[in-house]
Length: 273
Image (cartoon, rainbow, N blue to C red; front, side, top):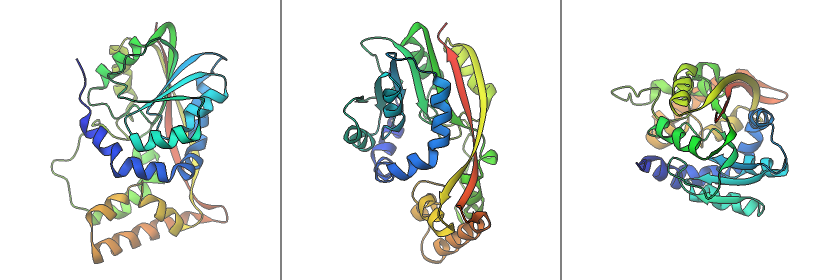
């Protein structure tokens, strides 16, 4: 049955996708340590056929191609794929939903950096991904650990939270979103139920340079981070107070090397059989 991810399609083809495309270079630089951890785990062999799920602006797809892969990148965001296609003619970029995609040939590797946590029905989506792999194919993806392990997002998030309207009822932490796969037991169940074997989780941490100073870091996080909701939902004095609180929260992390905050991810690997 075709999975309906309309909400995500709309979100990533509106302001979010355009913003990520605009900030592509800075975001790729910011996330490079985490991308590299996933790419190393992929252990790509020359000539392998690869699908990069949620490829966005193409950073990891291009890297996989440079490493010798025959790569297709798939994403639901038109603005981000437009940026990806402008960066490389060596990778085929496909506008489609991986939950419903049916390739002409199977893959040796399905890879993703932060692109698989947004499916409305993850078990159904991963079952489809499993069906795309060769019998000896493998899956490797990078996903976020809980917000408490990611100060690069949670420091600002905690600072602005008192100023934001409370959502009733509170969202389910497993709803589609950045932290949907923070619980390894939940992910283990999804992958097992989808047919994957030899499932492994490797913890990886790194300090991310969020900005040259607190103001620069806040400028980024008002576009793609937790403070972005402040810009969308608050006005006038409330907005100024929330941004001041976020700026003050970031200030202690400023050093000669800029504002550096820790990030933690799971590097997840599995095999088709």
